[in-house]
Image 1 (cartoon, rainbow, N blue to C red):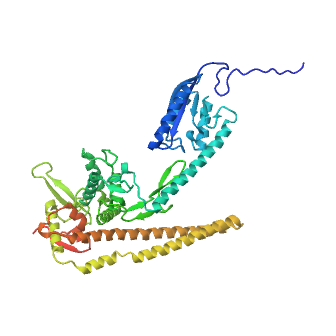
Image 2: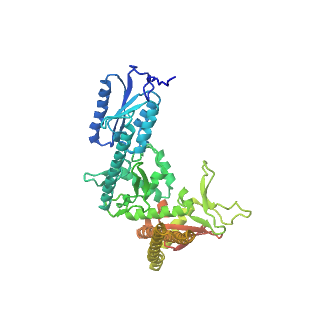
Image 3: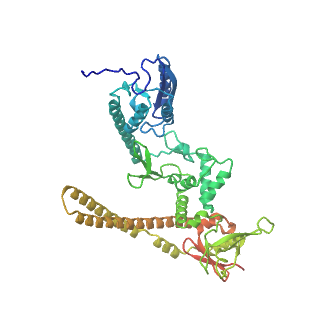
Length: 528
């Protein structure tokens, strides 16, 4: 019997699985996107929506679903495009049979995203038509063409990103300052593009600095402003956060300077932004615009914040004298206590925080809050009521001098660069020339350990330079403030504690030693 082959015709459409000859309308959606949210793109955006609405509705055999849109969102990644994601979800849920879009670049400039999405849709029987390129994804050549076009679009996105980055860095190098004005408190954009003080917002900025200088912690400032019904952030929000207050207190733009390129885009596809830790150049512009906070005050605040970073207790201060006075017997801080709270006999006192913690209580007594304030004012009058000792001044300046440390840091940096070059040379040589790998790894590890040790040493020296620089800034501010004291009108102010007082000690004999920021001391008796 002769072998025969009988062809059985297909009865269902490839990919969709629909019966051949079926006349059911295809459910069609459009996708429109513009890359920016600038005003000049609005027309393009609206035109795309209108075009696809009419194009689908007028096409025989097509049933209009909707036009999905994304406005002002980059095409390099599909992760953050809400309209795109909703369209894909609806398609996978069986609500769409066909998607119409302008071009591959409108769909995605990332080759991986484009192919992955197309394949997911194809597996569910959903076709995509790229109008500009004339590509239908169910076509046998569709995936190859999409791969080529997506790769070209991705390369275009890379080129655009590099050009934009170059433009930004050129502006930085030219000292041109820009800020996100809608989220930056205190400044508006001037007619020439420069920073112009917003008078009302500037009041809030100055108040934040004054609150910090008055002894409030950053967290307390945030809570205080949040509780005030009429005080809003730059973005118009009611809630103030610790980080937003700290950012205001540490941003050099408030003293009229600008550090440019604090962060950079690490990946043009994901638009991932990272902190610049030396990977790309930075530019510091002095006196770039009008200051809200005087440079002296700003520098002093940085010194106080740095001090708080070293001593976590100062970050949680609630009163001007918090974490300031130590017990001479056990070394613990004096803390505030409230006696008879809520009654007419309510009284705030200060005593050793370890007084009743050990087997033997400390012999240091307590001090009323009012008496401690009076003693502090008395110490100021006694210390600064006579001409300032220039010897103390010079001694402090000598102690805080960083010249030798800067020379040491420069020498260490030169050594680091030499060892780094040696490591690179060793790697390159090992790649070209066959050699004993055990010996190579031993030599490489030794140089690498040397490099790491030098880096750690350099970091420690730089940290000490910064520490002394902060202390020097605080001292200059201290000198400025003590030179203008009005002893006849001297009244207690929390600001005086922050500006003048370094620390204090309470002894068992009932004396308090006040140590000022220049290292000088003044003893005042608790009882007189």
